[in-house]
Length: 354
Image (tube, rainbow, N blue to C red; front, top):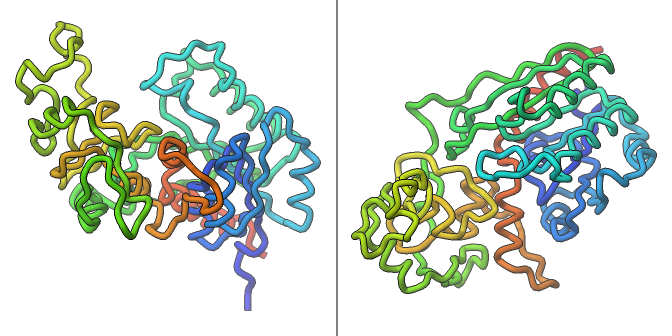
């Protein structure tokens, strides 16, 4: 009987956060050896849900031999990473001096020294705008210089069962040949919706915590924002309000550009991209489709395709809702991690079979 190809492989997840990418690999039955992140507050969620070691370390300071030791008994070394995307995101206006830009260069240097067999890098599509961000071309050139076959894919998340209108850049690289992303699993006829994802949860009010699920909690609204959300229909936004409820910026001609704030989601569509500020009503189209509140932490996690039993709350520490929202919003959707893992497995079966 042949050995499952996954038994010959081991995964290290750089910039692992709370474990979204890692959990996708775990769901696909890969062995994840460790996750590395500079944010120690992610440690509990990562370890508790994935059974892997968490190493709190800044990638620019990590000892490469520490990682090589993790791979000591591994035949097929897989290194995955999602460098923080804020510098490249269209939602921010960072200057090129932002230190986080260097993280992709640090990731590249790590690849050169470790020489993993397979690499995956996930980020925002804006990163691949070559004229604007030379760091991406530099990263691809580094991989090709070191003998990797590189493929870059723009992934529209609903095509793979993720209920968000999010597009991500997924780069895959291997020394044995090109890795193709597996075919789309969904079409517009069966995209997963907000209703299918969160409608089963018990109703709660703004500022309330569900009695049986501490993650099903919402931020408290000001009285003005309560009036605003009550005046917002499903799928609507600030343009549906009486002028007395509008922000000053919306009353200016330039305010027409601020279409993606103070909005409600639509039950039978996908959610917007879940961000680190996804539980704030004024931070995007994060209003619940019918309840007068922003989405809860649990709803955000489900829209990020974390399983309902994924544990974010360390019982021995006081963790703020803001920190958990950051962990959820920064995560790679678990389902996207699983799609990447499935694509890598297919590649290994084609190129590493004995």
